[in-house]
Amino acid sequence: MNLCADLMVLLPELILAIGAMALLLAGAIGGEKTAPLISWGAIALLLAAGLACVIGPEQATAFHNAFVSDGFSRFAKLLILVGAALSILLAEEYFARLNLSRFELPVLMVLATLGMMLMVSSASFLSLYMGLELQSLALYVLASFNRDNLRSTEAGLKYFVLGALSSGMLLYGISLIYGFTGSTEFAAIASVTAASGAGLGVIFGLVFLIAGLAFKVSAVPFHMWTPDVYEGAPTPVTAYFATAAKVAALCLFLRAILIPFPDLIHQWRQIIIFISVLSMVLGAVAAIGQTNIKRLMAYSSIGHMGYALLGLAAGTTLGVRGVLIYLAVYVATNIGVFACIQAMRRDGKAVENISDLAGLARTDLKLALLFSMLFLSLAGLPPLAGFVAKFYIFLSAIEAGLIWPSVIGVLASSVGLVYYLRLTAIMFFNEPAPALDKGRAFGSTAIMLVSGAVTLVLLVAPSPLINAADAAARSLFP
Picture 1: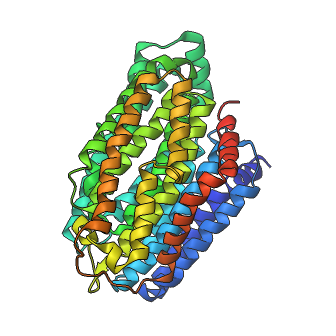
Picture 2 (picture 1 turned 180 degrees about the vertical axis):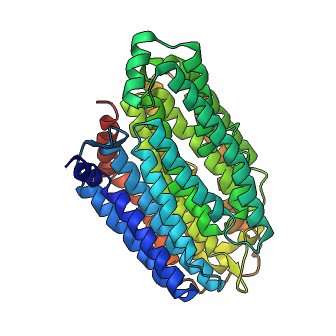
């Protein structure tokens, strides 16, 4: 009976696990011609898992408290599933255009998504690591999926080597925490640290744990892989890294720090503030000189993770609410940006340089307006959704007394505005480059339009998102 109850808690994950195996068998039997069908099957699986998340239990644990289903995990899972489904749609159109469709790609993305969903529901370091490695192994392959492209294979190799290093650091940190607390369960660790305080061994373990998690969110100084992987990976795979993978990693960061170590906030807050400030500053400054738009988006993502970590540093319900609002806006905006980047084709070939956007407003005004709207939302400029996201992050940080990190964040945001405005100026005021191809697939066009609409609507009617994020954040602080 207990097994049945446990399986019901993990119903969304079971749907993806069983569905991925079925899609893999179908692809192996049917061959490459089944790739489009399997892509749509993968999207259907993700939608079914999303429905299971919505109708699932509000608060439940499974497998001896190794997994938990609560408002926080459901919010994170829905964001992950949306990012994954839209990335698969972009990938189907991208590889079909190149005649390189392979059925393995959507299957790998479903398996990576399964790992992400296990991560955000983890209530033990053992289940955390299991989900993390399931995600990582699939992402290593996805980064180098275009194996005939030198940059893609290089991206996959760099990500694999640095990812293995970060996993080693994470495991070492977990082993120290287990050795000095006697448990891998978050609740038990919290009880031990509340009773006996912060021992030196636990502090060392916490430092290594944060270092391993910081790699997963590409926070400075563990960001080295991000520009190369973003540039080298196929565009829809980069979109997947920038949306679903970032949400999963940051939500895992929140749960793995706030639940086991609530009484050590003065110890870990200093580290989080340090990497947050470094990420905000480097993300703002390093992006200015970029010439490749995907590398620019990589540095942009580093900066955005810095802002989100400021909400974690607050260590409060308001801080977590701010992070969740930020992630929702970040996913909606970034998936639209990468759909626009995928639309950048000239004579049938993808172009990725910023110079290729020159004078775009004169040759394709609609694409230029969408690009500009999404870039300015990422910059946090009102009246777009990015302003709402940054407002709630800085509000939570200031209420937690983090004044000087907030000031640095506002200044970094002002510097970041420079390169976003530069992109807009290039599109509207430079001499036109040769026109981009006009014919675009329905899916990517729909994603661009919906993403643009969301960036406008969220400022006018933010209440549903704020209320959902608030309820999710409160479930993390019982």
